[in-house]
Image 1 (cartoon, rainbow, N blue to C red):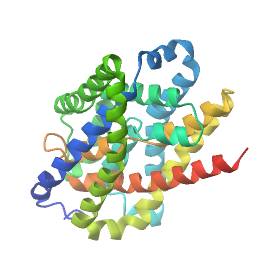
Image 2 (image 1 turned 90 degrees about the horizontal axis):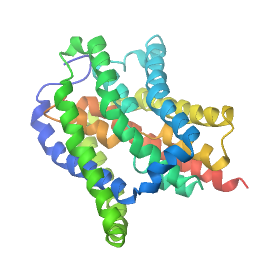
Image 3 (image 1 turned 60 degrees about the horizontal axis):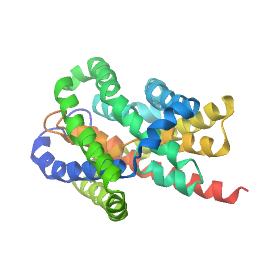
Length: 304
């Protein structure tokens, strides 16, 4: 036991979950590649300002906000008991992950800039190949010794290349040469993604219901505060740099929506952390993130 969290025999349940997480992440990344076009990368040269602002908000400011929230929550009695090393690692893992592929759908629903959303998601997926190991190495050196958790950087890099870069590249090449086929596959995959994530959350809840129920109040509130702070940061950055309304709505969604599936994969992977407790913040984050963004899309539709 560490605090109130059972950590023994984690590997006995890991393999059941990892066989669900891996296909989900691969499908999401392949689907992202299916909607990528060369024009999305030309957008970097044509409109660099919103892309640079979005990437700085997501890759630099978001982990800083998460770490600041952790340090602040550590002195608040309501949250202090929740901040075990395993949960701290899980929270930072979410904050260091790239943008979620579902952000493109939310950008479309919010009448945002879908091309900008796709470009930001693709760029963050590539950049975080290097920034995520760097930041998480520091995080685990700060808090991981208490529970004997350390980050194997080389294996993390190889896993991310196999599970993210390869599927995105395959989808991109298919869209480049067989765009009609890519569009048909995309229509199928985008209907599979959400039920698959629901299945994953359900399995996690069944396996860890006692811990999730016990920690949902404080941990759920922390993850909600993190989402609201980061989406607010996106709106503030867009306002400060005088971006258009479509760009502003996209940055709010992109900076606030992280790839929870990747965080769960890294947490559960036998090659990396091999600990499902670390994945619990990502599970709760995925739930609260979708609720917050559904509310945001509703607000944008009410406004002229």
